[in-house]
Image 1 (cartoon, protein in one colour):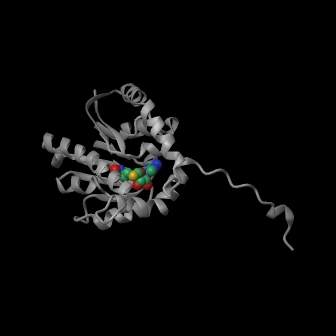
Image 2: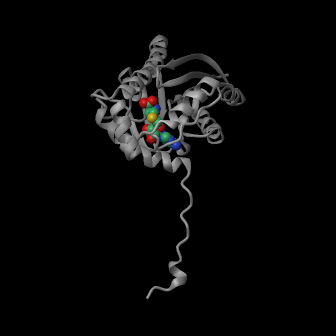
Image 3: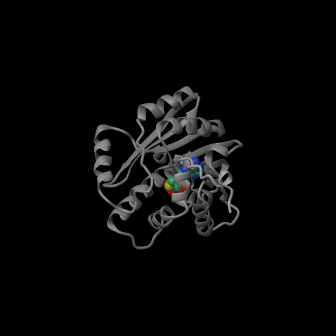
Length: 235
Ligand code: SAH
């Protein structure tokens, strides 16, 4: 018979946002986002999100094209997903280090890549990334984290950036707070992670305190996707 004192069940600790996010992007989230970030048939909402997200990616690629310096740069794409940005950026000549907390997303990115050596894909939580890169990019990741965590994440990403940090996030303003409330009330299979909105003024304050200045910015809004994109350069 089992000794009671050794089998007493202790309640598992509540899952942290990070674990929830990682598990989601290795399971139902992987299936959902792999399709949204792909080319096959998707439903109307997913198509809308696909178009919005592609716009954000295209803005970043456009900045590199304008600057005509992709080939001289090392890029860290933190939370790279399936490589939607990393792969075209590598094909433009940048040396890209693409990482993501989800091994499934990274696996998909590797499959989609045309050059097996660039991007270099790695399964990694962005908090444990190290090294120095000309440009550090983090697109549509902060939506999974509350302000308190996001600040530390931005500070860490900034510490890896030699000259600039490109970030996107879902902006918090009265209109989007309302939209999110409505969205949260609609039942659906996609609500496995919470979506956190961030005040643009808070993100700017953090970047400023880290010694960065905003050089370019964009905004994408479709019916179901909205994302503020900031390019912050080191002073
Ligand atoms: N940046 C990509 C993917 C956005 S989806 C693009 O724009 O195409 C959000 C991604 O962030 C998911 O792939 C998820 O696994 C990843 N992610 C979430 N939290 C992370 C963390 N702490 N560290 C690294 N990646 C993370």
